[in-house]
Image 1: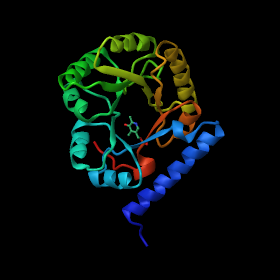
Image 2: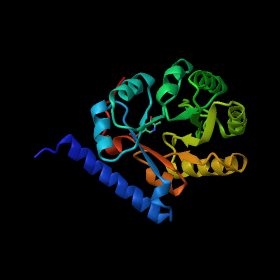
Image 3: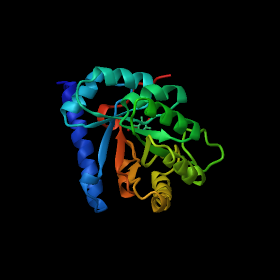
Image 4: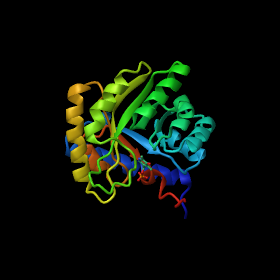
Length: 234
Ligand SMILES: *Cc1c(COP(=O)(O)O)cnc(C)c1O
């Protein structure tokens, strides 16, 4: 007998939740320190509604066009996270619905977010994305180097409509997530000495969230683990 989509997603969510609990127990962390963000890119608004009916409170998207349409369609009250690389010309739209922008990595983007947030009289919460790839052949999936982090954070702090809440990163392809997230934790420790209120650490996806929890992640971004493998696009 084939399971309904609701049953499938419910069982995936139970599985992921159990794994989060186990990973927390293992390293003596509280479940309440962890926010689960369901990354719903490529999946329709109806599946976002299913997730909401199962108790999900946070969803993540990586493209403005798709995110905006879903945000308009979905009735359930949710927090919307923008986790993808962000182009300056999309900022005006993204600022309208994003509760947290995870992918801030350059001054031009910072200035545009300030400008658009001010226009709608909003204080925009955001994270700085860290590039953990130290290899020279970095194909660049976004993020600042650890050398440029404090400089960018200081710039953000100058703008009245921006609220820097922490850091985000993606473990580079081909790098052991233990090494990647250990690197991230070191960067975060140093960063927190200067920005003690920016406590969020957005790290960990379906394949590596247990490791991320061990290295201090507060926000997990999980897509395929909840909704299944995405169809290949492009
Ligand atoms: C797609 C995506 C995720 C979720 O990835 P899964 O492997 O499906 O869990 C997390 N973070 C970002 C930035 C993404 O683009």
